[in-house]
Amino acid sequence: MRADPQRVKIIRIFSRLCVGGPSIHVISLNDLLDRKRFESILVTGTTEPEEGDMIYLAEGRNLDIRIIPEMGVRIKPCNDIISTWKLWKIIRREKPQIIHTHTAKAGFLGRLLGKMAGVPILVHTMHGHAFRGYRNFYGSGFYKWIERNLTKISDSIVTVSEDVKREIVENRVAPPEKIRVIELGFDFSPLDDLSPHRGALRKELGIDETAILLGAVSRLVPIKNLDMFIRAGKIMLEQGKNIKLIIAGDGETKSALEQTTREGEMESSVFFLGFRKDLPKIYADLDILVNCSHNEGTAVSAIEAMAAGVPVVATQVGGMADLLGYGKYGMLAEPENTEDLARKITDLLDHPEKAGAFGARAKEMVRNRYALPRLIRDIDNLYIELLDKKSIGRNG
Image 1 (cartoon, rainbow, N blue to C red):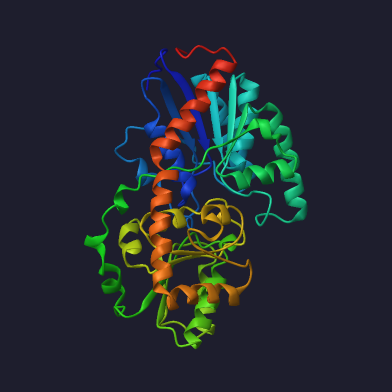
Image 2 (image 1 turned 60 degrees about the horizontal axis):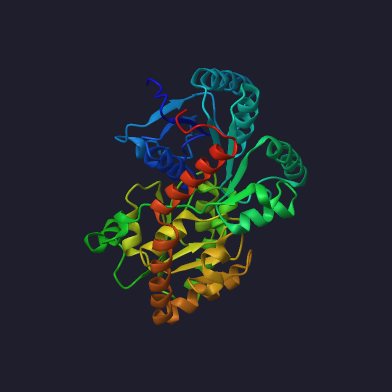
């Protein structure tokens, strides 16, 4: 693809397009930023087999995507050396005005190489709470040290919520004036009319119409704490609730979750669906979406469920309290408290009018707050502001 000297060139670097909100985010930005003013290149690596791959979202969008097979989330010295060299060659060849990185590993390589190559503007987005729940004490300390030093060469740090910004400031990773909060944005049109999908999931799984469907749409990884979801379901089943648990996703903890299900003699009540692309079909039949993560930035599945009018119950961690309006748009349960999670879900089951009110309020809120045009406008404004600050002409 030939460079257009009339456009600002952006290289967006993302470790891999695994299933999750950040993948949707980077694809949307590369697709929808004004192509008359910006030339966007997405550099990404490969996913692990258990992570799922969202490259299909880019199909048919005429995007410039450069895949470095050796680049991924895990540390593999030989692959990392090769991917660093390949990324360096791309940066040197393309000579972008802006490098925008996403996720920790891409943020480290992209900003360091960008600085070495003399790229004028370096931006990094933190999509979640990176300092809690993912690493041990020593690992978190080392990561903070790295990020503090990378912040010094960054022109802006973007966070997806005020809560994530607060954590960064409290950990002295970046000063508040260097942080820009830009919340996520989504295309909610597939969730506008769910009536054609109603009943399809129940029919697929052979679930009676009288059963209440509780769902989790998530990667199956330790931070998501889905064992708590199953244990809460066990409590409600023992109380005589007619519920079924739907888990849409895949990942490294699947075997352990299946074991928890067997130990609780819940095989007939828990359904593992694997990764699904037909999310409207799932949200159409869910009665409640549950998020019980150890830590969470902004849960995409919760936003999608809210946009579909599905009430949400979540543990009060990370940005979930802010997303749920501290109880205005959904129910918040105590972190790591299975009994409280079961109580909060049961409260909605026993009071369907409350569940309906949550769903209606949340639907209106997220469709305004997390609209995709707003995200594109905010990123556009950030880039123009940084270009003007450095007196870089917008004609390249």
